[in-house]
Length: 175
Image (cartoon, rainbow, N blue to C red; front, side, top):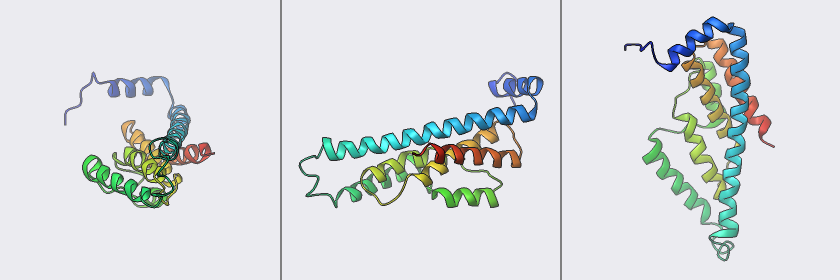
């Protein structure tokens, strides 16, 4: 693979090497990842509340009590279609997969994990599924930090630090 010297990534890496120490760059990246993961977690929670509100107060307000048991099934079916036709990969569970990636995969997580949990978890929970949002929040934030670490060529220990900052940002914002 040929490297384009005029790409934004190469220019940024040269700028980083010239003006920032590695410690300064990691601290800035940790703060940015923690902030972005927190914003991501809040957006995931708001999207879930929007789906719940539409189901309870909007679209099916008069039929809500009669068909309450059907909504989780509809949610699972929608998530199944998203996984099968949009994501096309197995969506891993949140915190256990993050721990597995840290211990066995050197903190490297697949790119699709960034958006897979963001799409599926709010629909599942919004339709009344029996899961929480903390695991998918951690999985998405950790995957974002892992892939940013790959993008900026940080080593394994720094990637672990970025994953920890993402986990802290997502859990800390989940109030």
